[in-house]
Image 1 (cartoon, rainbow, N blue to C red):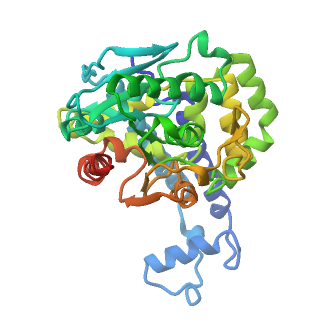
Image 2 (image 1 turned 30 degrees about the vertical axis):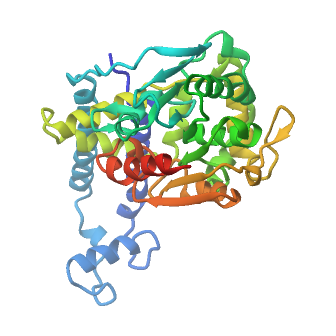
Length: 412
């Protein structure tokens, strides 16, 4: 059974709160009869413009002519209609017949929950290892036919592998960020190097790109090139509200993480929702108006299923990510260290491509550009896509897959 959009109670409460605030903002104006009232004047201005009248010459206050009961009744019906359409969209999504049938290749190597998967390509071709974020399922890189960067890379003539982090288990419970790098990512690359008898290219998406940058600093000998796909680095870009929230509520957040032993999927989804609190309402009201039998409806469900199929962050990684990165900006301040070594991007010597989606609301473009500017060997490529659209959007094959695979193949 689909549980999304997660966390559903929060999204419904947000919509209800927005409607209540709209009522609260209008009610004082209905009780004002003075022409010069600061509460009624803005509404009078709009009413006069709509009637092609001058508010200065029209002595009548429209609020005194208004049937307040009828107005509130109409407002209530509109509000109820908005909520009804939202619930209809959520219900249509939850009951949609689509179910994902695409199956990931079996693991060729594993470490705890993590697994390396072989997505094919010529045996003697240059190898590339794709690394997704820790907080989402890896299959966004292979979402569907014609929307799979992994399939595209293999068809373009690259020996293509995916490091699938899996869902944290007992082994990962005590992991910090450094353990994912030194115990999983670097050994996986060493395995590919031994298997293919060559140093692979490394392509990291989102948080996976930040971790890949760490590998390029710590072990330049295990990679032949680095692709950073919407990889965040300056966590203080466009994040003042989030930083204030993290600072103010840090004791509470620390308590929740300690009690759960992780940052749960619903907790992380709530954090992402705070970037645009009205997004879910807009999306699902729009979905309610669609024909559920179309390809567009199926693509919506397909992507929403992935968004709601999240992965928790283990306790130490959650603290590092939320407070070390987002609150303190340790990466940009050159304070992030692994195994005693500072992760300084200026030390990266591998040929590097940084792909920066210009419509990214999860990793602001300036955050990713900050990393690109610090790497001496880096070429930056801006694309007209969003954070998820760059991987799973209909324009992704043309705007991302093609230039990315060409760059990976052309490396010496």
